[in-house]
Length: 215
Image (cartoon, rainbow, N blue to C red; front, side):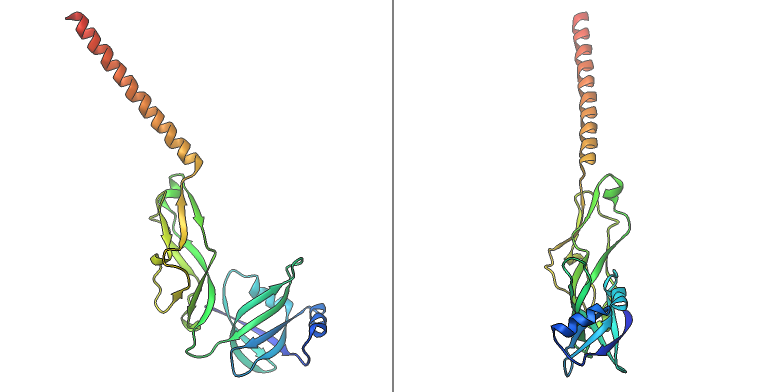
């Protein structure tokens, strides 16, 4: 898992008025918990956005007035209209204690079914997992190369040591679906083959009739 550094400031007072004042000055209020004590802080909105609006998942090195703490983002609140981050909850990472995060799901290779006219459907952009932070991969990968039209990959097809995937083993991750264009092409091909067979049958019947007339 990638690491990012953020510098925060401890909050002297806690409340709605103080939080609104922080947001007005382009800072985001937050809470750090999971360790010996819970603390309230604020972060630069610009710096936090670099981590939040990013496809990767990060372990954070949070500097609070000179004290550095390893943590991960546990929850984020957004403004319902502007989508600005309004609050962030951080969970302190403790040695030997697993954490829950959502890792990006990415595909590698090109599916045989797609090359034959199928369509790839990804059911999960991120997958919830549990594991030790230092052992968490940057993402989960699925090799779609062998997938033909109608094939799929499920959670049971992933096997990553030391990582618990918090979905059912039968959960569908990615599927190669049949498209209308592919079905139309197959129907047209079947029709041509049927026509050729019919023509062949008619020719055979005509030949038999001709032979019978000669006899």
